[in-house]
Amino acid sequence: MEWISQDLRQHVDLTVGRLHAIALFRLADTRYAWYVRAHHICIDGYSGMLWAHRVADVYTAFVNGDNPSPSPFASLCALLSEEESYRSSEQVRRDRASWIAEMEGAPDAATLASRKAAPSVRCIRVQIELSPKTEAHLRQLAQESGVEISSLLFAFVAVYLARMEGMGEVVVGLPVTGRLTDWSGEQLWRAYIQLTEAEEAFRLYKSDLVMRPVWHQKERRVQAHILVCFLAYVLWKTLSLWCQRAQPGWASRVCWRPTSAPRQRRNTGPPSR
Image (cartoon, rainbow, N blue to C red; front, top):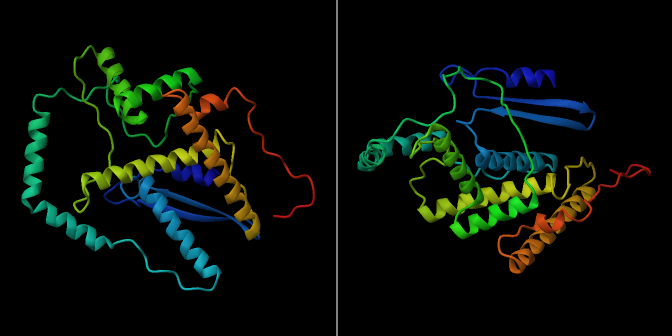
């Protein structure tokens, strides 16, 4: 863990530094930990998930003595060629003119800091848990507004900044999906929604359903664990639909939390991993 902490504390220079680091830790004869650290300019949540699936496919093929399937990813040369085509097109000039007109007269980006600080390699994270009643109100407001709850929370932050700064209009910066020239707006929106649903499913397994990852060494145990996770998620989504029909804006965790929390049982018998 000390090596990982030191690696995470390193400052990355985009011009000369390494943008990623990969390490494989041997914990036991048949147990390893795979460590990946990458700059956000290389990998984001969506592409990281796709890349991890590709690594798993290649690893599984080698274990089974098969040849890996062809890579589904395009080459870096294709990406650079697409970028060069865009920069030399009329579209880039229209986009630039549109954003200049959109941001004309806009105030500086809002901030609560009194001065600029040097880039930090550490992340300060604070986590709180909302009450079921507050969460239900937020989800109902998001549904009535026709937006995702994440967009609603971003709006709350903007309103808070406006109030603290005494401004009628604020400018905030958010990382968003980059330009995809061959995708329509509808395709891009569907991909974004799929990403949020995948992240929500992972969060459910780790928190609400208490389905923490379990290390298995036998294929039948792996398949059984996947089946249990799948059934739990199906039941959760079914409960969500029932809650929505009973009371718009309700979330399944509103009905779940008053009951006793599920507990993971530890096998005290002979190990059969």
